[in-house]
Length: 136
Image (cartoon, rainbow, N blue to C red; front, side, top):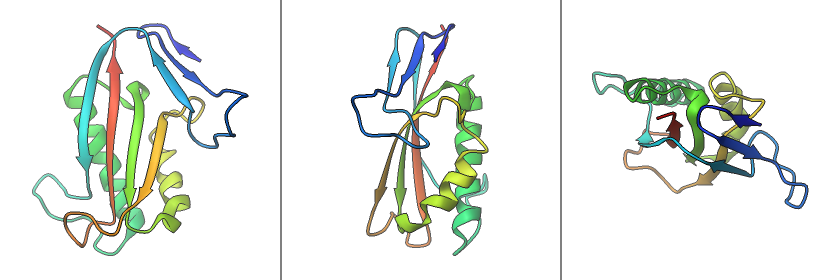
């Protein structure tokens, strides 16, 4: 599907492996690119939300992404790429449950998920960065 105002086209190709819950690629014809640094489960005062609670941390992380998008005049509809770093990738189903409350599931962003040994702070269980495109 193509977003008319930005010319973003999400593609699921028949020649690539099946992509469940994400698009294989996004083609951006025009628009202003926004790069959002990895977000974690910290609230606006710098306090960790959901110590030891993966679902709570994912929700706070997506709320932080939402705030970053809003600060740049964007929404999750503008997100073309998500990179997610998990301490335990077995939590992916919980991640997808929360993520799907934020992203456009009909045309989900291009995504990468990676399991890492640990994040910068040991109590962080997930970190997510995003790229968005806003109409000019």
